[in-house]
Length: 190
Length: 76
Image (cartoon, rainbow over all chains, first blue to last red; front, top):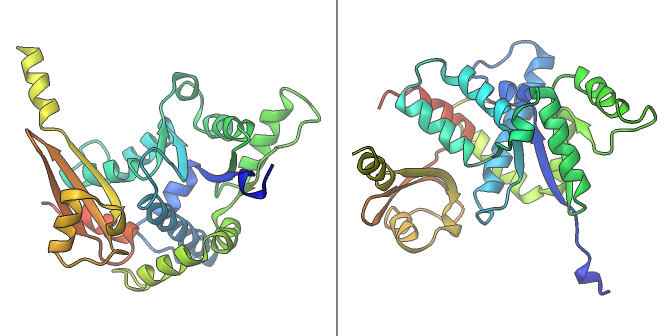
């Protein structure tokens, strides 16, 4: 087998509801810890959009469950979305793969993302990274695996956005520089 | 009657996504070039399908998340 035929696993970001909450929060947090989570989530959301914008149709860099995305959409626009709000949600839905399979949608928002990670991990061509800014998610994932086997370990990384940002910067240096430049030219001051 | 109505809605459907100018093709690419956009610019590409697809290209200024949040606040 030649070196060129070795398949490098494809990184897929699996997004928890806390990621959406932090990345699309309009108010800039005052608290320094929350500010770091907000800024790193905003950076990663921009990186996802930037990367997805140049990927061929059918390829996805970030994925979430329908109920996670719907939960975000409802919090974003409420009961009576304006035309523009609905458009923004549609745009985001086209930048993130939203899984609508009945086997996933019947699960809680916590378990749904864990099942997506496990499914992606089981297909050897993908390396999932679960992005969550809720520290208790790690315990939740441990419980999830221990239900089946008390000695089982979580087979994929679970990271906060602050932890994931330097890793993603090392993998996508050029794209990260583009995101930094766009954020500097943003309507918001970073 | 319902079928005819559904058909009309389908015909008028629109798709909206963020794409990079360098990956656009055909008339969408021509529309971006007409606006003098650079290959690395991000755009909101809106495709309305009536009898023939129509492409509307809008340049994203700054970072996409901030641009979208600002856009969601506007009424029109």
